[in-house]
Length: 141
Image 1: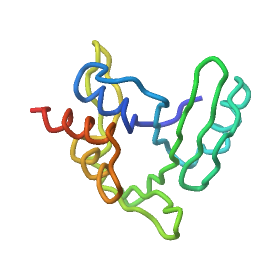
Image 2: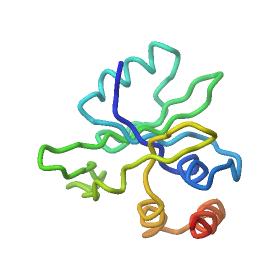
Image 3: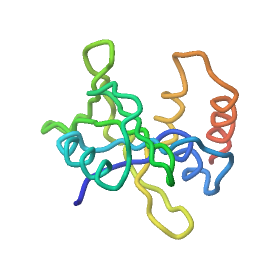
Image 4: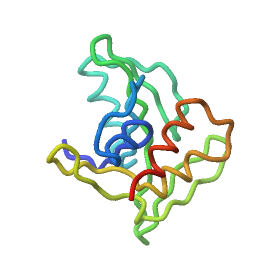
């Protein structure tokens, strides 16, 4: 099954900095929303169980062995825009250049950009992990 995706969140920050900077509870993954049902079904087939369901914005799943995934369906629109459902209604609108890739340990990894990560780390009460991630993002040249 081929699905377009990008790393987000803490692992996304680590991939951008080139090394794991801290422990992570989960992996945040943005993916092409047209494959939502297939993605969920595949994850359930391999043992993930739904823990939090805030669809169509996000879903958190847990596997006894592999831990947590936090998945975020995004819409890759025909006009080139990228949107994600806002849990409070409407849509977030993203710039498509925020969705790119970087090299991590010799592999190309799809991830959201430094600029998008910094934006996504705003507008709420930041945790200690958020401050740590922001510091690491700002260290990227």
